[in-house]
Image (cartoon, helix red, strand yellow):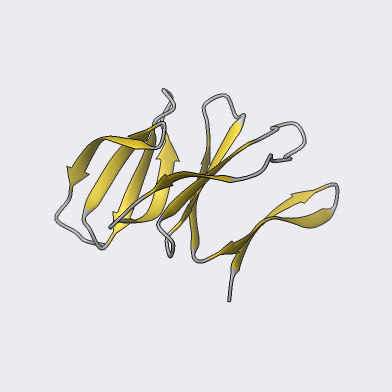
Length: 110
């Protein structure tokens, strides 16, 4: 079964992004104008423009493809970098413009 990202606005629940495998970490840019979402099953981190006033998004794009890592949780730092924990690899990776800047190895693959 596919996962779906929904938004709730104006008393309605609306699908925003369909066809996800395992929707996981979600966060917004420091300015609030960009949204990031990790799909663990595909290894993709999606991104889209975001309107904080209405909650509307632009079209989602593949912002990063993590291989062999599977992005699980993620967070965006005040400087706009995206940190993602990768399940099964024991890595926490900092991404800038969708590319790794640095990584931390932790003694816990999950």
